[in-house]
Image (cartoon, rainbow, N blue to C red; front, side, top):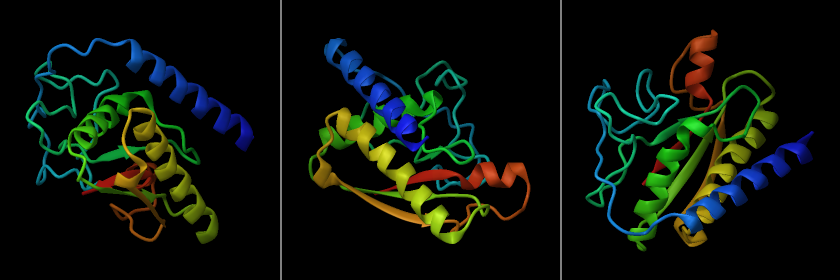
Length: 180
């Protein structure tokens, strides 16, 4: 089962690399965050922040997570399904924006913090948090980010974004956080 997951992840990564290699390099993407989120805008994983629609388009029609002016992308949290380290397609635009930022700022470094909900053993959750962060690192590297710019850390279930023992709380805690 784990081999199938890795094969799927690799297939997605290679497909994205192929698409990126075939895309146009002319012009820039002009886009900012939609500004409708609550909180400080840092995407720290608190309830209601850092999530994007499945289309990756903000409420004002701009691409979510992409910055045209070289700033760190505002969305700094991506979320995962239960017991999964597979990156959801709705977060690919966010990851692409982070890859663009890191490629354009060779001195910038990021720590990818992997988190899980409280279900499962501590050891299992530490490993799952690391697999999630490594999946994000692989995505960034396929996009051309230098491995020296990216560090992976797993906190497992130890640092929940929100308290609670229901599906909504669990969904908020299954995440990878970009810490610049």
